[in-house]
Length: 409
Image 1 (cartoon, one colour):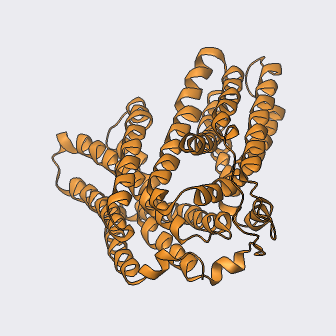
Image 2 (cartoon, helix red, strand yellow; image 1 turned 90 degrees about the vertical axis):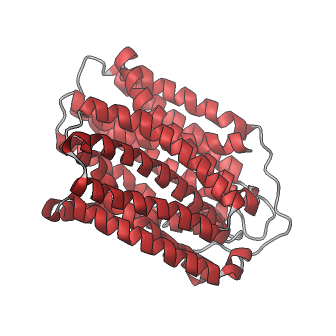
Image 3 (cartoon, one colour; image 1 turned 30 degrees about the vertical axis):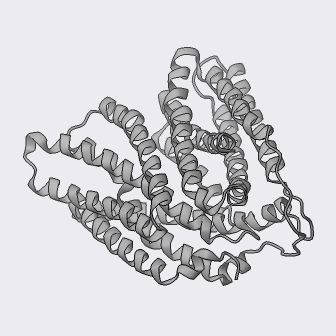
């Protein structure tokens, strides 16, 4: 089961890394404009908007009036579709291998990756519902460790590994190898038999039902409070290091190696926190460390000696990566327990889309604030807000323990 879950989330993250990290690099290396490379942020749209079609996917996954579950079937079909899309992209690159990126080829690749993003985000709806269905409440922590850890591995495969393969063999060959990898990652799920539901349930999944539930409203509040601070400064980490003298090659090594290793360590820490402490204490610990690390950046910028400043900032970025992964595991495990088993895919998708919207909005605002008031002001706000949110979340969860034990009103 764990390997099946890992394979699904590695695939989704791999596709996202291909479209939002590797494709911009390929376009720029071929002489494309920065504006064109920046347009790849449009591939985030399906992930931010998937709540719109989540109810329809959930109704197909859990047919009303039936004991059947179709998660496995839906996910496997999506995985095959993603592998096919990458194979088509490889074919386009192979037949247009005379060099560069003709306009028609760029348009075709952008369309293909927009379709791939839509397919991957749709699979994610079913995957989240599948995890909530198959994992016990005590297993949500480790399940989310696998989910977040798989995402980091997918980023590594779709980002650094793909670019290295592209440099060695050409990007069409690298793309084809990614398609083969997706099919290999699908094998563990292929071997699983999804159990039927214990009873026939007439419930029809809907967004309105989610928004009427106290548990879902609590989950939305947790996402809004806890993730806003870090999302405010997350896009500023790379510019912060570059502006203080780190080379581009060193930045790449830090983000591809150090950050991923730190992220995997953070996922393990999050799983342990969720196993041995209550959700409220786990969130308080994870986001408390995150808030302190953000404030440590402020202290470093204000007080650190010049010859040590960059080294300390790099260490703090690694700490941020550990705390971010740990916090996400704790938060999403808590959100799983707040999702209704009647429509887990819809509820969890609503939480994720809220987080994506926060990431877009907070990132833009953070950049503007940094431009006018400097890095220290941004990190001061983010750190103070995160610490306050962690304490409020702890108090709120402690007073709403009954909601954590009953996912259905």
